[in-house]
Length: 109
Image 1 (cartoon, rainbow, N blue to C red):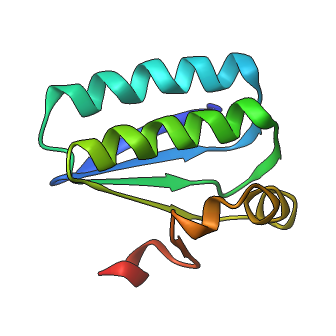
Image 2 (tube, helix red, strand yellow; image 1 turned 60 degrees about the vertical axis):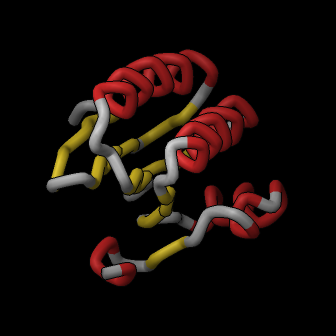
């Protein structure tokens, strides 16, 4: 399975990231997602972390950077599929204070 993939559903961009989100992967994901956001008509960015086993500070930075970009453009950012280890990182970093978490992707609708 690829380490990350994207899908579009109307104005939603869903980013699936599995396994590890380290510095190298964070840079690759940032570039790819930014291109899609800059093409326009992305109102909602959803990070689906189902299957992710590791995330370091560069992963937090990648999520924050995309959140800032979406906020600037008037869009929303959500996370789903958060496992125990990544949940702890999100809690300790304070990301949940600005980015909502959903157990299922369809919850927010």
